[in-house]
Length: 141
Ligand code: IDP
Ligand code: MG
Image 1 (spheres, rainbow, N blue to C red):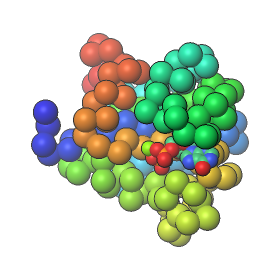
Image 2: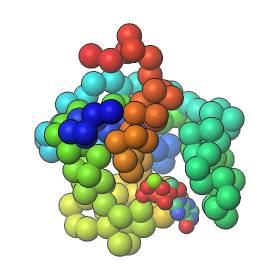
Image 3: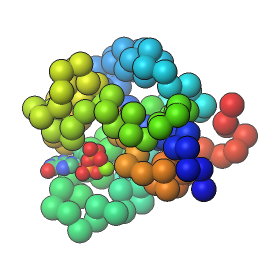
């Protein structure tokens, strides 16, 4: 287990990809000191999206979330930085863009609480699980 929190996992969500915001979001990620270890554009099946968000399966928005996250391509990436998980959560802002701080990715690019532009891991353990879910070791650089 890496106690330095060197990596986090992110997805640029379907509405942000659809709105041609991949470049703007990646620019903010790099300008804030994150190194891109791996990155790819993929479309998740409903089954894969459901597996990814399995921890939320009892929440009322689970069905909507799975449908949304499989509705179009996403960009998945592994990011490296000291304190990566906490620093990336700070960069993306609150889940609800109406509550996100000025200058955060969600404040700038999110449409709503559900269509909120980006995912960010919430712990070192989940960052590793999520990275492993999307990437194999030969895709990491
Ligand atoms: P987070 O992405 O900020 O960590 P979580 O509570 O882990 O937020 O929720 C996962 C995702 O589920 C959110 O990013 C958002 O897309 C969606 N979501 C969260 N809460 C709601 C809600 O109340 N209504 C609809 N979608 C929601
Ligand atoms: Mg979360």
